[in-house]
Amino acid sequence: MRLDYLIANAHYKGRPSPTLEELNVIKQRRSQHRGDIKKAARLFVGHPGNATFKFITPKDAAGIKQNRDLVEALTKRGAYTFADFASRQGLFETPLLPQIIGKVYFDDGIKSEGLAFFGTDGEIPFTVVALVFAAILCAIDEWKTGRHDTKNIAFTKPLYEDSYKTHLKNLQNWAKHCSEKMKEPQIPIDFRKKLYAQGKLFAGITDDEPDADSQNIEEDIFTAADFAANYYATS
Image (cartoon, rainbow, N blue to C red; front, top):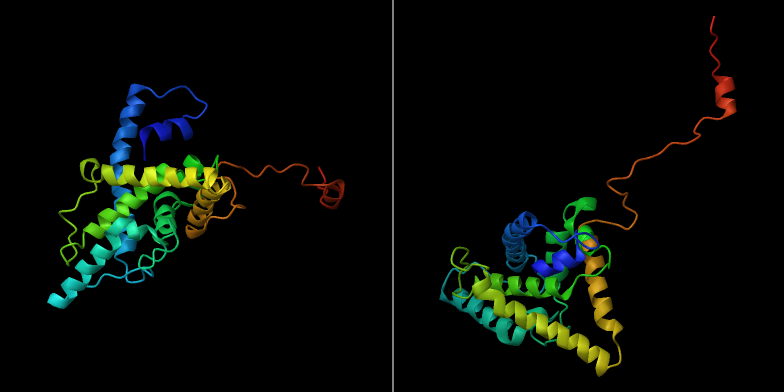
């Protein structure tokens, strides 16, 4: 996640700017955060239950070719971001997106980072969507040899920053198109709100969850009738 977004929209929103020490902690967390997203992307991309596409454990040359062909098809003009990569229908609606968002940001119940980072607006920002798309690409790249390579494909800034920037630009251009050409500026807003709701739902979080810091305050729980019925003699 971009450092400036965290500062502007999360724990520092409406508060003094972070100190140098706090910035260093955030930078360290950023590296861990990339690892968390890559791990989740790998889980869902290669999962047998992936309803969008399926890689296989190859037993022969034909199996290796099948995986290579799938990688080629998925990575052609960002096909993997569609709900149906073959027909290119459902732009930005791959089921992997809310699944990964749910796993990374909403997997800790009412203490989930997603509630702290995105709860104010109730939206998943385009910066996060772009980062998840880049992580999905990285997870797909692990299969480009035809076998699953989990050691040599690192989700690092030098390798995947261009992918992140491209996805972010595409999302911003789409929002601009919705607003200026279609006269429907609410579409991308609803998209981000839907992702937030899907992430919470995936993690089993409902809007009626109790606040983690709240306490039950009992006031006037006993009535005069209770007192009379439970009179204790003093002698």
